[in-house]
Image 1 (cartoon, rainbow, N blue to C red):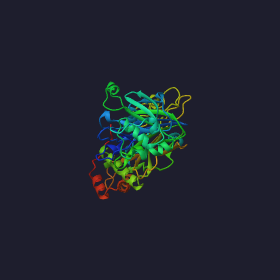
Image 2 (image 1 turned 120 degrees about the horizontal axis):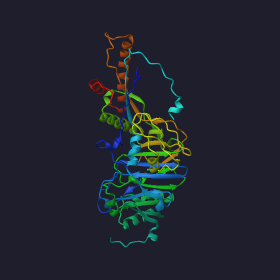
Image 3 (image 1 turned 45 degrees about the vertical axis):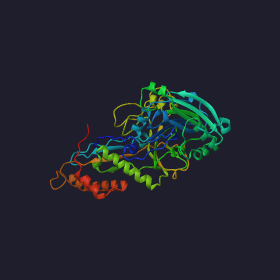
Image 4 (image 1 turned 90 degrees about the horizontal axis):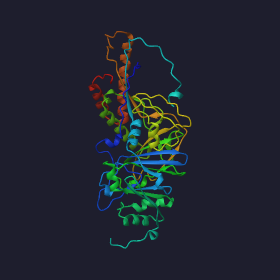
Length: 454
């Protein structure tokens, strides 16, 4: 009964961080500050581009505080050199977020009495679904080695190795950083693994040259068998459950965790049309995610999106261009455009240029606590290329008569089926969110009739 579709994709942008009272998010490393500055990191987003042993990690933070107090410490598997580090533009994250965000599609039922057009054979599904006073001790006595130091953009960077966590903590303190309480125990596991430490702080003169109010994301590339995201250090100054969005760009297919349960969120469900207002859709998604995270005890990694980057359907935003993918760390593309631009709705698959390899985007959403995530996030690529998206559907009813004044028997039958369908939609929404079902019914009764968006 629902054939003619007008698709309106309503994208969420980091949905849970926008809501009042949303929890602060941790980062891959931790922020350290001088004196009594209050450091806070939230709404963290990470891009990982993985090709064999090669990983490009980009980090976006929403740091709020004086730039003189900013510093970042991230464990890395190898010593990074100047040429392996750069800054990128925030828009790379914004594009990935828009493209992969949970979305809402809406359809309008057709007149049940209208003649049906002949069915058109569809292409096989395979073609469609295709992050003072004490004397100073020397670096050697502390077990700390400065492997390299350089500046990139507005950041002054030091690469450290260490043999003692207490020594590393002391070194950071002696060099003007105030380490959050409990830093040494959190640093120890990385030292035992032989990892290095990427330490960055802001060069104020260079920052002034950018003319921006915000710090640009940092990106670095390295080769290692380890495919993981260090999260534990970020929990030192975390307050309550944390959220992290991880965009993983892969050559082979979907990416999943190897040490935590990876779960796909409920998707492709019909919901009451009272969610048409973008604000209510965000409320729904937040409530649904809250409930799922609690049900999993904050121990799960949620998949929000898996898709071939050459196309989308429906599109919350156009696929990233070849240049945008390169900026995100995708280095295995050949010459020519990857993906295409155009109006939102549906972008059909674009043939890859000669020598190019496909790019699959996996969007993972993690909500965790110190207790629920005792280890860093370990990842693996899979060969699974089946598309998945957190997509929800509103089906607006036909507005014509369906009772005694119906113009055809099909309209009467449509009316009976419609009432059953709308009750199922109400129950689905209540079950997903925990919202009171009578309140959902009331909202649905009061929802205004909708017309297709232009």
